[in-house]
Image: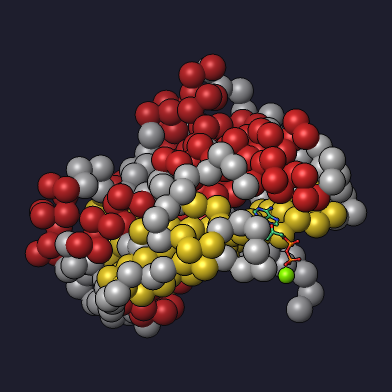
Length: 323
Ligand code: ADP
Ligand code: MG
């Protein structure tokens, strides 16, 4: 199958339409209408075969996840995603693969009413690479940012952590789980649900500081602390863990997974304590896990009040390379 036939068949149709698209797939560039009094939020994320997903991941899941991780960045800004572009590189144009891949993309895109408005299709030597750029809208001066944490804020997360990390251990054959748990954690890994609604609600309720947890809580909260020039203490026993994690993983190891494994795509946000009750009414699944402090650095405290040291803190590309 040739490039243009593939674009026509898999990327020009099957995606939601939107009234604010002046020109979509097919011209040299797409044209969209940004509403008055809104800012444009733009983000790009790349998934590389064997780095971000094992080579045996289904094409459907690859498509789904490629969009999910990008929508998660919109959620983290409190933005409403509207449009995306897709740069796809693969060694060949395989019709079955493209069909499933575009279906995974389209299913999630439809759920969130985001439109595919353009892209680029190229041949690679071996690995499949997918870059998605997503664009969303957010009310002026209201985006959730990493540099807005204030001393005295509480630190919250929108849901349980470590499930995708356990999912990765499961697909890599490092752990044998009962069927239901295996399905649950592998779904968390392969089809993460971006917390768009939560981001919008936080935005509306006056929260200013958030990040999505893609590289593990310690790493991502670390970005908030650095950008905001503050420190924090986390209380480990408050870390939300799924029943699957609690039932199958010893506590210490569960904390390790929850705080340092990536791909959960929950949101971490900080907010002044007086707003917490209102937020909890709108988002019952949030958990308070710690507080923002003046003393720099990130401290984790065990229930016995001892400091806890993680074995590794989050995933970092090039972490093993010599400068
Ligand atoms: P150009 O030569 O102007 O860069 P291309 O030949 O790369 O344009 O692409 C033709 C049209 O198809 C463009 O509108 C482009 O946005 C769209 N397109 C190409 N690849 C994809 C893709 N993978 N998904 C969606 N649209 C695509
Ligand atoms: Mg052109």
